[in-house]
Picture 1 (tube, rainbow, N blue to C red):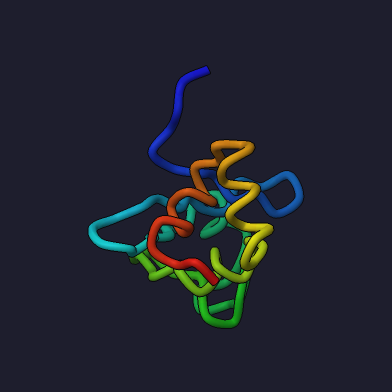
Picture 2 (tube, rainbow, N blue to C red):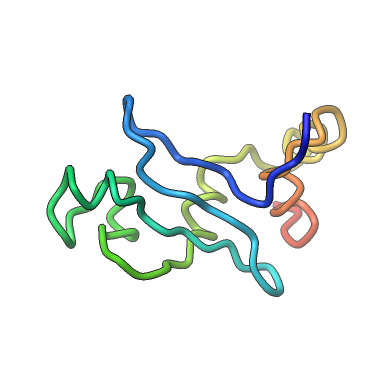
Length: 94
């Protein structure tokens, strides 16, 4: 299985966005065409902080809110090798 440089975010059966690491400790989110076709611009589809739009958004707070904290995060990172957890664990040891 090959590693990807992005993750797809699903809401029900709609692939609504992709997230990917960027320079430094940034994680960027971009909504999909399917999301733009399904919901109204400026609607909070995933989060009140990530209003639906055509640009790229800072997804760090959103991703951090999905991941476990502290020892659980570090343990998950080391045991699963999860890309999303590794993205954040390398810079944020909460």
